[in-house]
Amino acid sequence: MRIVLTLKTRFILFMTVLALCAGLVMGSVAHLQRTTDTLRDAQAARYQTSQLAGWYQAQAAALSRDAAAFVASEQPEFEQRHQDHLAILEGRAPDARGIQADARARFRQAGLDEDELALFEDAHARLQALVATQREAIGTAKGELDDGQGGVRIALPNALLAKALIFSQQYTQAEAAITALIDAFDSRQALRLEHRVEQAAADGAMAGRIAIGAVLALLLCGMLALRSLYRSVKRPLDRSVLLAGHLAAGDLSIPIESTGRDEMGHLMHALEGIRQGLNRTLCRVADHFAHVNASVDILSSGQAEVLGDSHDQCAMAAQMSSALEGLDDTVRLNHDRAIEACRLSEQSDRETRAGAHSVARLAQAMDNIAQGGLRVEDAARQIADLAFQTNILALNAAVEAAHAGTHGRGFAIVATEVRALAQRCDQTAGLIQSTIEAAIRDSRQGAELAVEARESMDRAVQATGRSRQIMDEVAAATESQAQAIHETAQAARRLEAIGARGARQAQAASKVVAEQRSRVTDLSRTLTQFRLEPASTLADPPRLAA
Image (tube, rainbow, N blue to C red; front, side, top):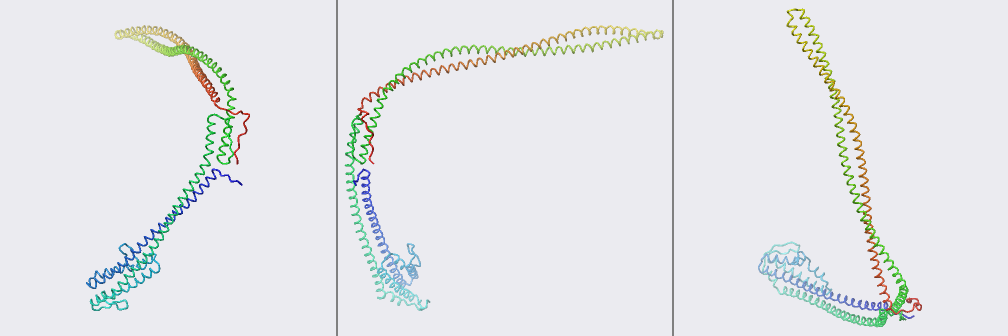
């Protein structure tokens, strides 16, 4: 079976090679990083172990120095210093860095091998024996000796014996042996760590060489893969560019052939499909061009007629609008006159009603005057009756005075005067009664005339009210007519605006038709630039290989 190396397959192979090379480079870099860490750890361990050995030697020297100083001077501060250094060494007190641990634990945690630990244990045992000698010398100098049971036995201080213990050759040899063991320990661990550093350096150099080789292999594989991709893509692309140039120039008559099955072969098939599809499309466009051109001619003539009709409609709408505006002004003038007449009618109605009310009051006053005259007539009758009775009494008094003779003469004179007064009162009462009767008749006639005037005023009020109602109806009808004419005028103006807008739209449509005609002409010139393959010779568009 033949393997088709498509661009996708080549790209996958290229990425696989790149991934392998990148993995090799990453492994080399990781190994180099581990080697670097090993070097750093080895150097740190060497420094810490050397520092620990120096610390141990410093503590041993400080113990010997403080013990010798106390034995020589018997100063208690030296004994205290000796106890402090011994407490730090045994882990009962922290050192200057704040670390509290005995020397054995510190050396066991330093990562030493068995030989190095054996050297330290030997040195530490010798140091403990030396510390016991120092304690004995300090106790001898103080006169406090160990009784062998954990207690203290008091004796005479013996500085000379204490100095013999401290400064003896055996003591000096023990100190030198401890120093030699610590130096041997330091040299051994230094050699071990140095060997470790050399091994790590060798591993690092190997990792570096592997990384450089991987980078070079990556560059070489990349160059080879890129060269292969370039050769597989460049030639088909050059041919595709040439064919695309023919298509861009409008030459659709050259068929595109391709037998490849990779992506570039697919591209050639796609270009051939584009050429055939574009050729068929342009053939159909050329076929429909004549129909579009004829339709544009018909549309242009129709738009010209529509534009003329729109102008005529605008002119007629303008005339009707001006006529309706004049009629609207006339009707509004009539409406204003009707409103003015209605207002005058209302004023006349109010004045007529006021006159009717005044006449009614006049009739009431005349009636009251007639009633007062009747009461005055009754009073005059009573006065006449009183005058008649007074005259009778005066007559009786005169008769009685005549019977009395001379004694009644003065009374007779009075009676005569009273009778004369009674007669005058009777005459005056008759005159008042006749005058009042004449006034009553006049009042009754005035009351009748007032009633007639009130009825006439009522009929005038009714007529005025009916006239005002008719004027209100006329004003309302005039207002409705004015509103209808105003709305009709507005509708005419809107119709005029619609006609003007239709004319503008028709004019714009005419411009659009003219523009479409120019575009059709341009399209015709554009179609002449293409070299088309006859539609009858076109096959189905090529199908891409699976």
